[in-house]
Length: 150
Image 1 (tube, rainbow, N blue to C red):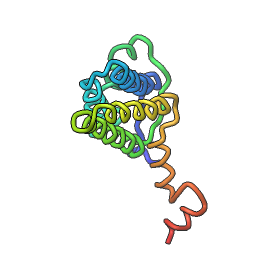
Image 2 (cartoon, rainbow, N blue to C red):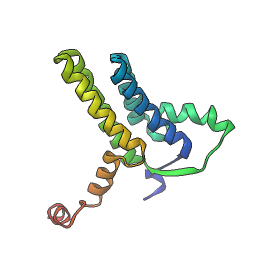
Image 3 (cartoon, rainbow, N blue to C red):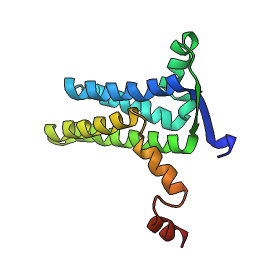
């Protein structure tokens, strides 16, 4: 990985970002607040556009609590994080569309599923990032490596 494809951020700032979005989504689900789903979309979309090092929640933590309680740095893949944030913003946009245009239960069911996915990501296993990394190396298993080589 070249320096151009790496982002270096405080580990605590990255964790703050992951957990904040997760908490926002669970609050949106339990309190049935559509605007919180819109907020998660805005944060994820900005993170995808600006990159993980300049994402709103990473910047917020870095220049507030990160000044008081600095943490170790973590090296992240910019393309993988951009892909993950793009996928997250697309999922939140789907949730928003379902909340406003589908029967009420369907939208909240989608938010519930998205909150579960974000919880898995918050614990450090980001499915979208892993998928990007796996596919950028030509596949995740022997079969997909054969298919993508040809």
